[in-house]
Structure formats: structure tokens, C-alpha cells
Image 1 (cartoon, rainbow, N blue to C red):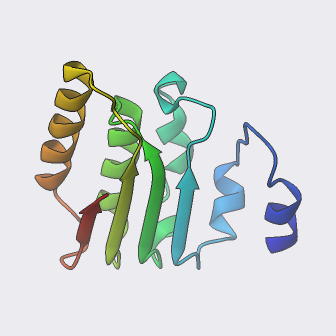
Image 2 (cartoon, rainbow, N blue to C red; image 1 turned 180 degrees about the vertical axis):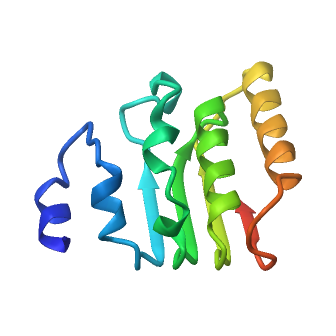
Length: 129
């Protein structure tokens, strides 16, 4: 699996089937980085492919860089928090929101909504960076 992931390091769009994730159920760390794509453009049906909660049964650490505070980012994090029973730490690195009042409000709302989500793990440290 590591050879496969190394081979696709320059891919801009990658779709993994839930079957691929099922054989990778011992993943303990998940790091994502938003480069030149916008997670807000992702369709609404992505969550159906991640319906097996056992996929994240060992996940302890999540790091996401380039967070914008969009709805799909929120849904993805809600899914992780709901299904990752041993999750310990979530680090979210927000991209610069500039001087836009609307962007700053969106990020504040995003953070506030994440803080009140129910979680499967009782020991989560969430860092907004």
C-alpha cells in the first residue's frame, strides 16, 4: 500500500473505493493537505463510500492543512469524529482568510460547530492553527 501511495504523490484528484480503505483498517494517522482544489466542490455522495465504521477503528491522529471552513470539510470531520473511537488529536491548519469579514465569520462558525459535535472518542484534543 505504501508503494501505491508513493506512486500517486503528484496526483491532483484521487478517488479510493471503500474496499481499498477496508484493507487499510490499521491506519493510525491521517494527513491531508488541500493544494489547488476546493473541497467545497466535492459532491454530496462521498460519505456513502465511507459507510463502514471499522475503517477508522485505529485512527488516532488527523492533520488537515489548508482548511477553509466549508460545509464538506465540516461533514468529513463530523464523520471522522463520529466513527473514530480511539481518536486522540485533530490538528486543523486554516488557510489565510485575508481581510474578508465573511471568511472570518465562516471560520469562527466552523470552529464553534466542530467543538459541539458528539464524538466516539472521549479523549480528543482539537487544535485550530
